[in-house]
Amino acid sequence: MSNGVVMNNEALRSTRTSHRAEPMRAGRLLEDVKSAKAAYSVRRVDLSDVSALIGDEPPSAGDLVLARVTRLGQHQHLELNNGRRCRLWKGDEIVVAYGERYAPDQFEAVVPDDLSPCQLVAGGGIAARVLSRHSGVKPATDIEPIGLLANAQGVINVKSAALGPAPILRPPLTIAVVGASMNAGKTTTAANLIVGLRRLGHLVGAAKITGTGSGGDPWLLTDAGASTVLDFTDAGYATTAGLPAKALEHIMTLLSGHVASRGVHCLVLEIADGLLQKETAMLLESPRFAKMVDAVLFAASTSMSAIAGVDWLRRRNLTVASVSGVMTASPLAMREAAGALDVPVLTIEDLATADVVRGLFPTIKHLPRQFA
Image (cartoon, rainbow, N blue to C red; front, side, top):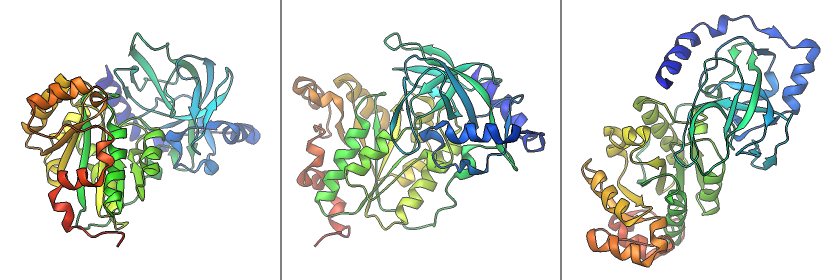
């Protein structure tokens, strides 16, 4: 079903800029847009040139929509474009982006065929139609689209605010953090690795390549001391679920290039979700990923997932430097994994230690240092 939606929307996209949008009535709707709660997913878009709402055209992934909250469910807060988590009430008007969601611990959702009522499927501001949900979460918050936001060029999409081409530079030492699943500890692993690299005196940059638009992970990487942090929303995508391999490679190349241009010595990439997620697998299996990434840290949720994950990565000729993640909260699980693996099994806190990081990456001693 989702493939059909994407194909249909892409076919429609070619005619969208010629669609005649109805001007906002006496500026009232423009004021509605300005007073609406704008989500993180649309943070790069300048809403000051919104001139119309379109209410009779199918949406595409990344399109901005003004919608009204009709029933509160799982997401009762919206992460605003300034980073604050804002409480939602029934009747609130919000500006969010359409996109797919792939979250085994929450929702599976697709871009709908029209502007009929749908759901808020992520706190960072994603509108979609829910196909399934984890039994441990509430039904999604219901929203009623009012119209797609448009300007003189047509329907506004988050791609319109993407970063421009990045300079071609010699890449820094690049380490990717991947995981067994959602909530395996990938971001915390990446953050502690950044701390460890900084304690060796290196200037570190970070980029989150895939996932669902939300500021929590980039802010944690910033708090860890990364001098520059970008995510896929900077590349013009509200989510990366449903994207083809070429688009995923473009995001990785674009963000890596922009972070590298800031003069960092090390680059930490975070890849969302688990190895069995389609987009994650496509990216990790791509020749470009193998060429750009020097080593992989694997965040495991269980000892069995650690063993299977290392095997999966090695069968794709990727160098696994270490296993960490939420599994390492259990000393017993760590011993199980360590007994079956020939790579270091390290707690998340170990990764924040300079000596540990130096041992993981022997070539790091040849990198420049930020501090004497």
